[in-house]
Image (tube, rainbow, N blue to C red):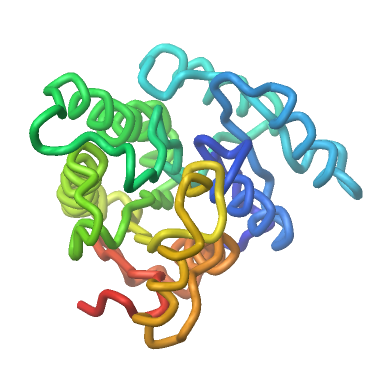
Length: 257
């Protein structure tokens, strides 16, 4: 399906990497739903920025990804707004987490509740969006689901125990969904970036850390949100129709697998 025929949901699409993913899909002509949880002003500003030619190309809808009924309602609102159901889901939202290597929870003080919080955001949130859109995707015999991971799963250079573990689970979740849903024409993949320069979540990271990453990366620079966003587009494009259950690293070659 061409981009201009797709209705794309980007969870956490009001800021950081999510906002850049929204911009990339809008640039290619897709209709986009920005899902936000709290910052309505930020989401509406992005809608205003992008709706320069088509007033309804981009819309913003509030909803907590951890709330199953909220996601079902969001999908219905999107259908009413565009006249057709969501075709493409980007599970990007990051719940209550900052990449702060100094003040992170370490092995002695991290709690099970910390793990649960990240698992709820990564797994429960992704499950809720997929289940909300699954009936329509099956009927259309088409669907694209892209989950946002991290290269810290393969190489936990900073042991963010709760975040890294949740993203590890998301990789398994991605592959299991890909196995079951492929027969319905639904492709499920993951895009895993490195530490991005700079998003809200990475704002606590020092310049020294970014410099170290650049020095140890084959491309000699820190990955940007725009570079990750364009790789997300690949998994939604017609060129990826034969690809599912895969995890692409977008980190300048820092992690190779």
